Length: 169
Image 1 (cartoon, helix red, strand yellow):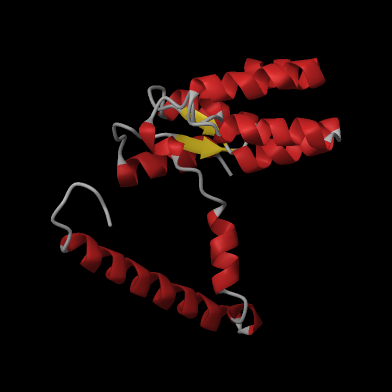
Image 2 (cartoon, rainbow, N blue to C red):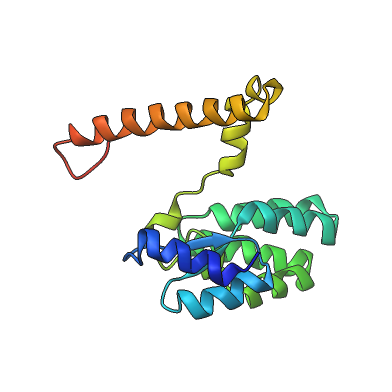
């Protein structure tokens, strides 16, 4: 699949919004396509994938815990504290993460406010909803998914239309 094609289609569908950030794994093709299609949109890296790579590459629980502490920090001072500790524990891991750029994976240095909300992969949410549907024939399962999403979107749109304030409930 061409990431450039995909991102062009995404841009045609949703445009380029202020306070938008695209999160992905560190696939080189995505990075190159982002530079072409969304040159002014920040490109962040999925902390789940980054954490998995840290576990695999460094095989140290303390490094993984310090990474988690750093990416979850809201304040730059908390981020710096965790990263200074990581530098003491494993300088190579520290340097790799700093070279990637904290603005790509941390709350404290995120260039957009929306990225300060960290959520788990949507795939996990969908999988938990589709436990029973996986046993269905493919066309029945697709119809089940369409129906489920349609209900979700209707429910959220109806709720949003009733909102009278700038903050969501």
